[in-house]
Image 1: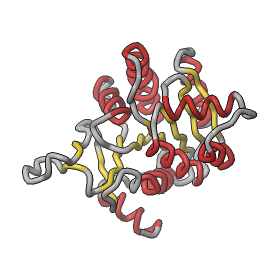
Image 2: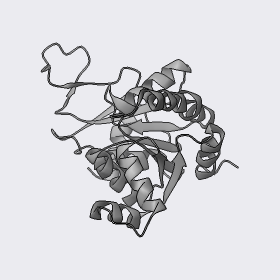
Image 3: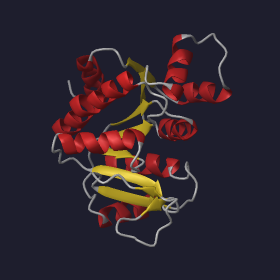
Length: 228
């Protein structure tokens, strides 16, 4: 799909106006209960309020799991009005009110405002689309990717977003992929997977510690969105 066609498709679901975009990627697996509670606060006290304050569009994978559920719940908790856009493979998700859908399909997160269902029947098929759609929605406005936890699909998401020159903010201490990247950044001389080396060579990566001040995290994000 050409960029012009993508713009038409976004317009058809009401996303006409370019705005700064926050892309949220990752998971929420194998996280301790204590860290999960802090993550929930990160969404409800920083990410969702900041999206509301700055008039951002937030984009993620759209399913009712992991960071996407946290984002949806946070938007609902603060009664947010910012667009929350889910990008998912059409062959893997259950459409609302579709009683004929297979029980093996994944539910969409109910607090998202828009969904863009893209071709594909495997997780990861949506990754390039998510990056492209975020760029299309942002236009000339800044956009940022935040990685929390995550596994193999989040690695694809991170690469695709870096390839379109979107800076990556990694939440160190959130586990799995995020911590693997943080370790590679902090200890560049240590051995690491080739995929992580490739990721580090593609674009800009910034770390934020999950245990650090939320005020500091907000300041980092505002700086990336050029709000001084």
